[in-house]
Length: 464
Image 1: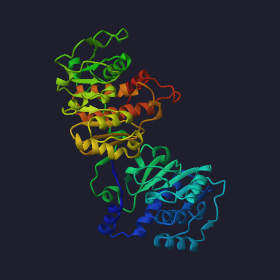
Image 2 (image 1 turned 30 degrees about the horizontal axis):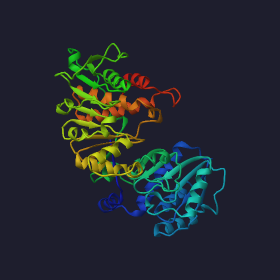
Image 3 (image 1 turned 90 degrees about the vertical axis):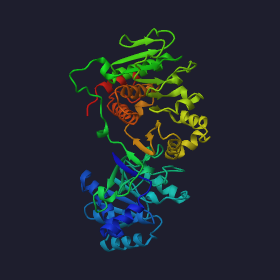
Image 4 (image 1 turned 90 degrees about the horizontal axis):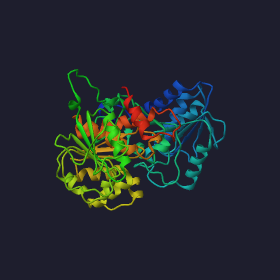
């Protein structure tokens, strides 16, 4: 798990004050992170274009040019000149070294480095800046963003255009703006450049946001020899009007380790797999309950009286009964963005549009968590956000193969399975989300082709 910060100015200041470093030294080390990435991945006969801005992000780019000068064929383009004291100083040093400064963006570069704005973007781009970014995007070659792709603002929004990076090398620590759904299309792979001290020393201040890593996943491996099916929990899944959704969740729960899984519906579904049980009511030994998937009209009166761990999904986010469930402990809610907008409105937290939500997902997730700190929220998206007790966990590991009907039903079953096996609601959600995402990465057929049943099968084969 890695720390993620809203911004790192305070970390920079502490680094200088506590360790005697200077802005100049921080910049040298930031640029070295990009230089070392290029040296490790590209032959020295490659051509590089560095496009720099007027401030310290541009200064970073100039230092990169100095580090790589004479090792590569480096060209520096400063469409708006240099204005900050550090940018002016670094440009002077670059000129003394003889770095090639070009007057326009040409073709044929192997590597393009964007050092225009970074995290310093705080106003809309003017027409010339838009033109420069579009020219960079039109070039072939491998594209690297310095700190963050130019055109992405401090909360991860793109108003007009943004640099389309293959890799972003961010300075010092991870920033929240790198992990908006909109930014995911532009940042590419993300790496952190050290600024002269180890990240553990640099990342001194606490944060409430964390990036999940694949090594954080803990699968429900069975390590005890003397066990039986009752040792691994009993999941009940409400099967509503759209029977397939509930059945897929039940299959997922069984495949992820639950000893027993029962589908609850007025009538036994005709296509219920043989290994799943059926009941018209929820039994006294229910270890976890999953409901909402394809629910439609369903009598919820008895469910509202239960105190069992519960995963709430899909149709429940349009029903007033959700407010009573949210008062309970051990509740996990798993909305997609449209459902989350409805949930926020039903709970009278805020009435917003889907566009407003997507423009600042972190803010609205934090807002919900402030009202319901005891509830685990999983907001689906390109980057999944999981909130609990004022902390947010980012899962960036999913892929586009999950953009199919039924993927969410599988996730609900995974969470319910871990709840029944004794995981806490937060741990169940984190681990199920990681398993869900990692399985999507291991799908080997065409990206448009995955079915929920294939997803369940891949999850059964996960190793870590």
